[in-house]
Structures are given as C-alpha cells and as structure tokens.
Image 1 (cartoon, rainbow, N blue to C red):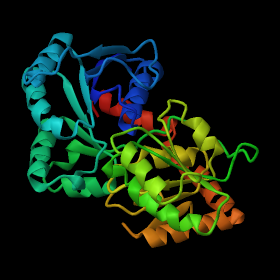
Image 2 (image 1 turned 90 degrees about the vertical axis):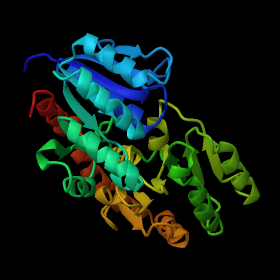
Image 3 (image 1 turned 90 degrees about the horizontal axis):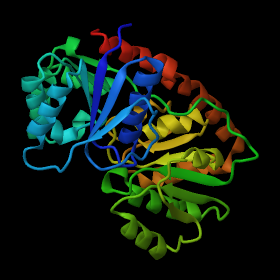
Image 4 (image 1 turned 180 degrees about the vertical axis):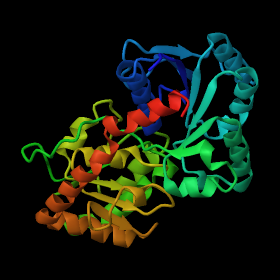
Length: 353
C-alpha cells in the first residue's frame, strides 16, 4: 500500500488513561506495522506517558489560547497530511472539526471516539452529530453507539473498530498470582471507585485474606483515601500510582473489578482479558456488556447495585474453579482484540475505504 502522511491529534498525550494508550498504540502501529509517516500532535502537554516508536514524530502545540482550533488547523494544513485522525476529543471536537474541514479540505478526516455518545447531554449530542457529518468517517467503539448515531449520520460514514489490547494474550501464571482484586483507571467521578470501596467494605466482612489494589492518579485521590480510612480498610485497600508497567499488576491479580458510571469500550477490561482475568463490572450504558459474557468470562452487575457487586466478587473469591473457568473464557474473548485483527481495519480506512 502507498505510504500516507498521517496526523493523529489528541488533547493531551501526557495523560495516563486508556485513550492516551490507544493513541500511542495506533501511532506505533501505523508507523511500524503499516509503513506510514506518522505525526502524533498533542494540543496540550510536553511529554508522552506511553512509549512511542522512534519513527513516530511527537509534536506539541505551543500555548493553548482561545484561537487554538484555528492555529491547529493551520498547522495541519501546512503539514499537507493525507489523513488526519482525531482521537476522543470529546467536547473539543465540536470546536476543532469545523476548522479542520474548512482549512484541510484535501485531508481525509477520521474521527475516532472513545467515550460513549450516550453520556452527553442532548445539546452536545446534536453538536456531535453535526461534527460527525463533517468527517469522512467516524470510528465508534460499540454497536449501541452505531445504532443510535446512524439515525442522523449516513451509515456509510460510521463504523465500529474495537480497541486493540497492547498486550499479547497470555495465560495467568499461578506462581505470580496473589489474592488481589485489581481496579485500574483515573481517580475521578466517572470511574466510580467510591462505589468500589463501598462494595469492598462488604467483601472485607467475609474475607480478610484478599486485598483490593486501585491503580491510577487523579483528582479524587484524597477523597478516596479518606473513604478507605473511614471504613477501616487501610490494610485491605491500596491506592497505587499510575504506571506504564501496568502489566505487572495484571500478572499478580486474580480478578479485575470495574465500577465505572459510564464508558466507551473500556481498555481496562480488554487488557485484563489478555491476561486471562475474570471480570466483574457494573452494566453501565455502553461498554461492559460488549466485553463480558455474563457468567462466562465474568459477571455483569445491574448498574449501581453495590450489594450485588459484592456478592459476585465474593463468589469469585470463594471459588477457585470458577475463577479458572472464567479465566479461560477471557483468554478466548481476548483474541477479538489482537493487532492482527484490528489494524487491517485501520489500514482500510487510511486507504480510503
């Protein structure tokens, strides 16, 4: 295939979340696997948290002012990019995409979403629909979002491409696993770790041998630590800093717990399946139901039912054979998210398909 000049645009590549991992992995794959010339353009920040291949050029926009959409569009116009990919720009896309369409009319514009359309209020939903109509293609993560958006945006302009796991599929190693339930994500309201700690308070009454490790950084750290201390869970629940070596946490864990209030297609669940972890998650509006086969590779719990979440977690803690069965099914489901399946779909989009 002919080499294309590709710009991947993200709000802040220095952040430590799943979106930033997806953008970094996509940049690396388009460059090294598929042979394109790739620039990763970050509107904010001054460094990258996740590793980038040396062939990927990292560019930062100096100083974000009120004129940043105009400056960004002119920068991309001067770069003469064949393809521009915006990654999960959220509300910012309603400001940025019209400028890109106006000033970069010859560039193929791909809008990659990583937050569920359903979490926006209706005024923003209508703005997002207008933005999607301006792009050449919108890449969505879930069939539910596709079914909703295709009511207003031509179906030919939308398609679902799942996230790629950054880790090879690998069976758990019993010698490394510990009695640890793992949760990963930004410490913020969306991720619902306050609900997880409340659920673990019930779990702790039944078992003293297990620990809950919550790995991440964010604005809610102090409040969550206060909740842990007030519940007397200081020995059982640990808030651990975000790390680029999250694989070591997956390898030592025996299950993955997720209590998000809303999601797109959660990278955390995809990553955990690559390590063969059983899953327990609230069935928020989009995401977990597309990854968890209830009582297959984990448990889907009715949104917000903390008591039921505790019961499902305890069921896994108390039954090693159940964990092993769920683990095997997670490994099978993880095959859906390997690079060999996902990146050819991106190649097709880059080429104009």
